[in-house]
Image 1 (cartoon, rainbow, N blue to C red):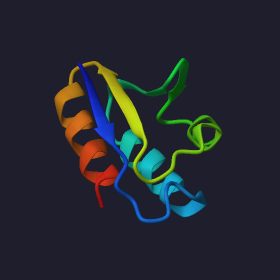
Image 2: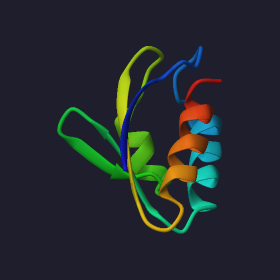
Image 3: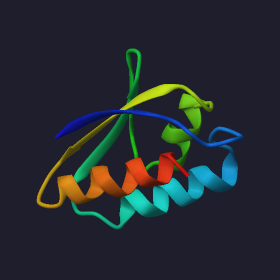
Length: 82
C-alpha cells in the first residue's frame, strides 16, 4: 500500500518528532518505508528518517507492506499532519 502525504508539521521533522514517528511505525508488523524523490528509508530507523530532513510542506510517499499496512499508513499520515 502506498500513499503520498504532505508534511504538515510547523517545524518539520526535528529530533523529538522523528523519534515519535519511528516509535509509531515500530508498533506495526508491516515493513514501512518513507520515500522522497529517489531516497527510500525504513520508517523504523531513526537514522534513516533523520537523513530525509523533511520540512513542513514537503511531499513524502508512505509505503507499507504487511498484515497491518492500512493501519500503519493511516497512523503515520495522521502523525505527519499534526
